[in-house]
Image (tube, rainbow, N blue to C red; front, side, top):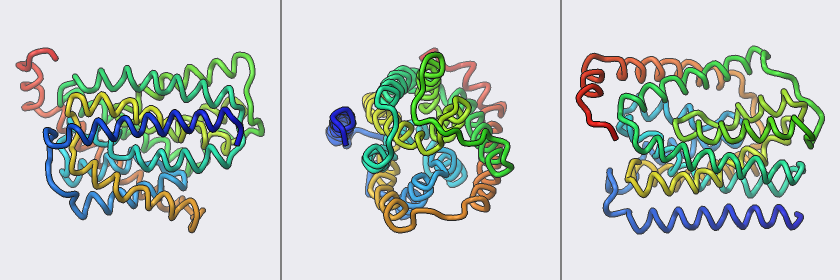
Length: 297
């Protein structure tokens, strides 16, 4: 591994350590105290196992949290960002070390995605419950459409490049900035990053260190915002954190690959149902009345 990759991993690990330290210091004043539930531990293991194999974790985790009512809707974005951070850092360490990709593109996309997440987390932490429900319901619909398009082979075919130049480089960076911000409302970055880079002519494998490195750093940085405001569910996030890394290790070093088409269709069905419930909650008369009388953040 060259010096740039070592430096990038060092930054990611330092940012992760800073977020964990801030979380530890605030743990007693956060919502949802107590030991992790068996449900949150099982969920963390399952979604991070699938995440490492390319399913993505944000959409299925959001769907389960909504359907199980494990976490209030307004705390789901922060719970996703904080609770899956450790597992994503493990993914970043594995894939940044093992997949060759253009160093300048790797660094610039990760940096801009992190900047987008810092801005996005600050916005989401001040959003009302109804606005978060609308945003996350829409995010789930987008995720479901992407999963369906992948199963139907509607997404662009793999390119062959491991590097980008000129306008393609700039386009990839701008996409990273936007996708980093959107992650804070529950739109996972993995599938959109793969789509963007494929459209720009890159090989899908090249997306793995970029998207995993970006998610690791932006979740550590964005997580600081959610910890500062207390807008996440401590106990559920802890359960996702403790078990998720074991799902990553099992998928990366033992299973390595699975036929995922049937699983994606299951995710599409669950996500579509959860999106309907989330948007229904946001558009209910009580939610509109609450939004109308609530003071601005």
